Image (cartoon, each protein chain N blue to C red):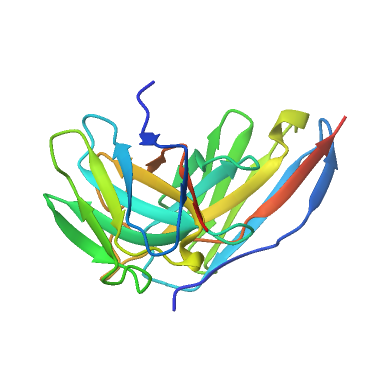
Length: 114
Length: 113
């Protein structure tokens, strides 16, 4: 069964450093998302992406965050200058037919900021 | 602020019983409703989706939606110890929030043998 893959599974970074989290969505999917989950808290939406541009972003997704689809398969989330509070699980998700269709999640990247 | 509320539990049922999980949401414009299962330290795994009022059955799982009451539920019949996980209710809002999922905090379910 097709799945969303994310790398790395765990990233440890010093505060202030840049990190790039990578995702390969399901191949025929067109809508891409990033969510995060701080330990013990609910899953929170960061950004949605369609047709090579951001569709929507949350209040969490400030100027330190950016997303890119550099080629036909990868979808990346960059955090420019990490903060301690960026420590969380980051999940990539994709869906095939858009706004109201089920989103399939990758296994996540655990980001730890020291 | 669009809210999704779930009973945090924990909910504990014996093997073979029916587990009932509930969810309410605040945005009347919501269009799509999903149940995800999340094992500890893992990612959300889609179990059910429901879009119109009524019941939708898939194997041991039944999702129920009542848009007038802004209420979604998930029934798990013949519960198994492997069903022990946190169940997340997620709602896709209408209006300007197309596609964005709002999640509840989840209900932790334990099925004991």
